Length: 127
Image 1 (cartoon, rainbow, N blue to C red):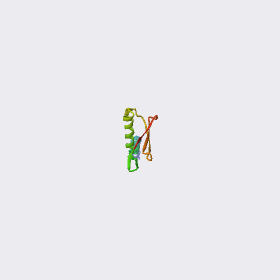
Image 2: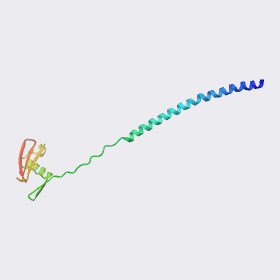
Image 3: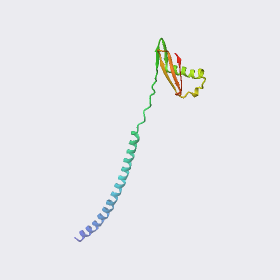
Image 4: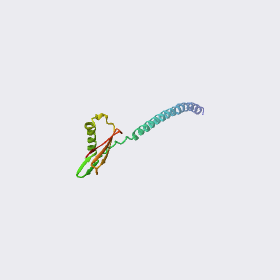
């Protein structure tokens, strides 16, 4: 029996000694693993936010065309503006760069276009 006590006495300290370092080492590894997992999750969330960003849609230009037809004649908006600019330069002897604004009023029943240039100068021309 004395031998049993000696074996038991020697066995207990060995078990306690090996049990303590294993128990302390395991929590340290788990904490390190948890920190790495948290970092990975944060990175994944940031990349998901970058993918969700929407780009503005490109604007589509609308082509506009205005035509006035009467008495067998046909004029577009550009035709009226060109004639008004010619009247400004050649008839009124003004420079084209002096024209800041132009308003046109088309009266087909009279075959005339009335104009207002720069909000002050008025007149008309035949079409």
